[in-house]
Amino acid sequence: MSRLYFKYKNRINLFRNIVLFISIIIISKFFTIQVINSNNYKKQIFNKTISYKEQQGLRGNIFDTNKNLLAYTIQKCLFWISSENLNEENKLQIVNLFSEELNQPKSKYNKILETKSDYIVIEKDIILNDYKELIDKSKKINFLRFDLYSHRLYPYNELGAQLIGFTNNENIGRYGIEGYFNNILMGHNKIVEYNKTASGKTKFNENLTNLAQNGSDIVLTIDIKIQEILQNQLKNALAINKAKSANGIILDPNSGEILAIASLPDFDLNKFYNLPKDSADTYYLNRPISSAYEPGSTFKIICFADALENKLDELKSHYFCENGFYKGNYIDPFKDHDDGYDTLSFDEIFSNSSNIGTIKIFQDLEMKSFHSRIKKFGFGIKTNISMSDEHKGEIKNLNYYKKNKRDLASASIGQSILVTNLQLASAYGSIANGGYLLKPKIIKSIYNSEQYSTFEEPTILYKSISETTSNRLLSMLKKTVIKGTAKKAFISGFSSGGKTGTAEIWDIKNKKYSQTDYISSYASIFPIENPKYVLIISIEAPSYNKRWGGESAVPCAKNIIEEIIFYDEELKINKVYNDRA
Image (tube, rainbow, N blue to C red; front, side, top):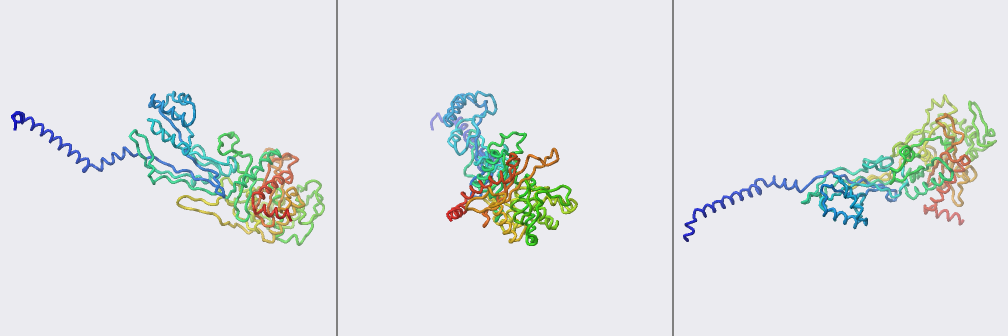
């Protein structure tokens, strides 16, 4: 050893001891971190790199019967930044990024970024799937943030508006299917794990499997093509007849499925917020379900059904129709349109829609029998279709009618009672299918990733009439089109049946029937030999010279039937064959 070592021996030893001591401390610290407190430190690190957010699954889709999308949800982005975090460098980056990706002038974003605020919105309504590159590039700019939010789209705009409904700004369903099935359509809430970057930005972990569950999808019985036919023709009728409103429903009598349902005036589901607030409810109203009215002569078929069930046509073949004016034992007389009729057969009373002839037939029925028949056809009670605001109509109890006999007589011709077009469609459906009143359906299936529910089988509520009576009524409906009040519904090479209706509108303010405003209606079954469709339409307050059902509702219905024949391959082939024959 050198003299230098001995000279500095004490110092070297001291330094060595210090290094050894420090090393022991460091190793002890490492041991404490890695072994003793490892779990605790892992949790701290994990908490600093992982964050948790409440996530809501996407709202379920709504489809028509052919799986055409009627309502679906997309994700949109909103980009924002705080002016406190804005410097010249990221300002330049933001301006360049958005002007290039969105093809907008730089001046637009320079002006936006001049704002002093904790929340400067740079862009919104950016569709996530269309601008993934923009989103990826935005993540590289410090302090630039983006929020995802859901946006509901309705591809067919106003078609089926009142039926489908819409979602508000909070993504809550309002009206129609969106409102009634809101809890089923809504996605589930769940706390989801996210990663944090070194800069503190939240980053979605694409490998995660514990995501929030989306809402259930709903398939409707609606056929959007038939819906379009119905709605467009009602819109034309509304304009041609200068009417206040119009509505209609098309139903499959063999399943109870509603194929189309429309109410005019309508609105664009994607722009529902543009409706005037003081009259928005007028547009939202689903009239075939929610508006009850006095149906007039379309209701006469109930009286004739009960008469046939009691074989009155065999007991009395002709009725004297009093030449249009009949008082009988009633305080107020009954009248026929125009000059009235002398003597008509059972079938002629129906096809010519004689009020007095129908009253005479009613008088040969037992009150209890007729009142019971009304109930068997489903009037006076809700159908309990899966929709809000269904009106049950208004049919008084039998004791009331025993004291007010004229009111029940009036009911036989569709006055002094209230029905909905949904109820009327179901009733005509039972006439078309051999006498079975079916529960109307609007939902075909509901499903998500975990379960599937389908509603294919028809639900029979009542046996309203016999098959023999059903066939007889179908024959009478056919005659009404050939030589009765519905002659304008006749289509060469194709057979349909129908019944017109014209009803005065009750003036609530003056407490009397209006002398100028009527509801023009038409109920149709087609094709009449093998019924496939039931169509009910009503036009409210058409111009006075078009007030009769045969003048406004029937031509509209004919146009609808012709378009459905062209759309339905089976009906089209049959018509072409009949035309050639």
